[in-house]
Length: 482
Image 1 (tube, rainbow, N blue to C red):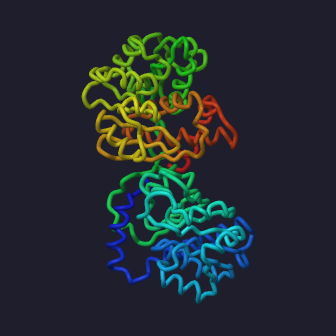
Image 2: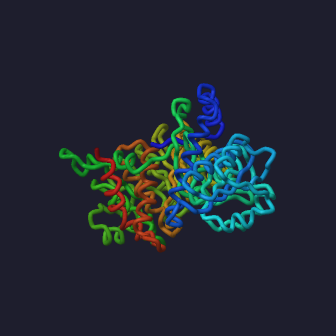
Image 3: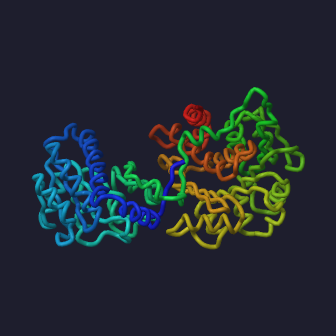
């Protein structure tokens, strides 16, 4: 897993590292990393490095210093470097001197528009991790003059480093170079950060346990259940699906199909859409009621069941079964409207809640707000459940405070029925015995990967996402097997 640390934790770790590192060494290392990425971007964008034009947006503080020193290194490659000094009196003195010695130019704000419009690459060194709020007027006025790709130093200026929020003018980067460790902004606002490149500056021993974590394909592939020579359909976990209705049979088909494709064990469907499910998935054991479903190792409940008395009875029966439950869609709404429905749950029985922002507000009484991480952690503690808060960056919090972030590969999952597909994945992994927090995170990863594989650059339906699940699982398994 890849760790992510808050800016306060990063700052304290940097202070400890700086205390035992020669002065200027860390900045030189960071700036060299920025320069390497700038060279790569110039080659990709223009096909050349020498005679390219790079504009530096230089603010006060260390990020401005990183940009200036990177400009000095770029001069060695024959790049024409011009620094726009937003606050000349507070520019990093050593970095500014180094750039000038190497033949780099500096200009005032008056000349900045022409410099930016002629640039092949812009390096954003306006503000650092301690800054909050939108860009100030002098910097904001330059945004309209940027047409070249932007390489951000640590974070795009104007984006909140811990929450990823944007309250006004802000940089949008094609690539962000960060140092020592990734910060929340890199996963909470990937659209602004672009590709994130981590440069090792030796900060690792100073960091401690991360505040957030992110699964990669290797993690997911290693965790994904695969049958062994002694397994049978029962030992792999039997998933129960209570979903759908006469009005919404598609929810049942999608959630059940997702559970079928996630593993090769057994899936039981229980509900009024049994005939429809059976016709689409003949391998499913389908019955008309949860009371007749038979034994399962985990339940998926909620998609399309309705929020009336019948839906409540179904939810209470599932919660009382004593097995892990993934509660989605209408089940989430029922819990929000009638919290005492959770009294049917045996204490300690794993529960995964999968709300989108609107459902989250109904559940908790407040929207996720700017600090989505704090909100989802509080909800996990309140409900003693794993809470999967959907979004372009999906957050998964466990009651013990662990948080996973899953960054989508696009917006392909913003389509009707995609949540039903996700719930089936979560349920299948719960039935296999996976830790509920990891099950929800792995399901979110494969869900977004399947959407990307299915879309291939064009909008895709939930059925298309469903069909791509085997390819997504095959991909992660190929990387997760050592």
